[in-house]
Amino acid sequence: MTIERFLAFSCLHVPYHDEGAVEWLLQQIESHKPDTIVCLGDVLDAAAASRFDGEHEHTLIDEYRQADKVLERIRDTAYTAKLVWCMGNHEDNLMSENRIPKDLRELT
Image 1 (cartoon, helix red, strand yellow):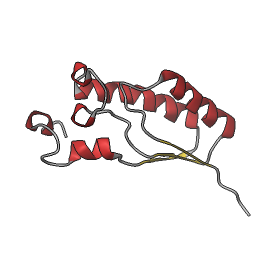
Image 2 (cartoon, rainbow, N blue to C red; image 1 turned 90 degrees about the vertical axis):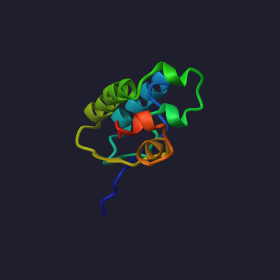
Image 3 (tube, rainbow, N blue to C red; image 1 turned 180 degrees about the vertical axis):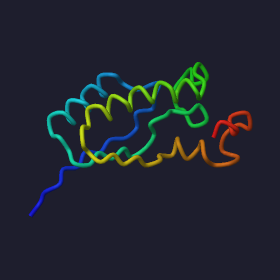
Image 4 (cartoon, rainbow, N blue to C red; image 1 turned 60 degrees about the horizontal axis):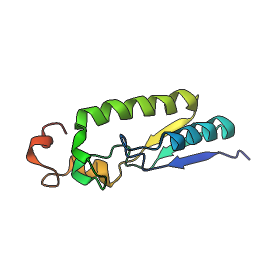
C-alpha cells in the first residue's frame, strides 16, 4: 500500500503576504517532501477584493510579478511534487464580469 503525502495552503494575498509564513511553508515542503501540493487559492490580493488598507498602492501587474516570485520559490522547493492550483474568491473576482472595475477587466 502506497501512502501519498499532501500539503495544502491558501491565502497568500500577495503583495500583503507574510514572508515569515512563506518561509515556514517552504520549510514544511522541504521537511515533509509531499507528493502533492495544493494551493487552495487567493494567491493574489487583487484590489477589487482587498480587505487591506492601501490596496491601490499596487497595480494588478505588480501583484502578478510579485506572486510569480513567491510561487517560483514554492515550485523550486517542491522538487517532483505534483502542484495543484485552485482559484480562490480573489482570483474569481478577477475572472467574473461586473465584480471588478471596468478598467481592470482587460487584464483578465
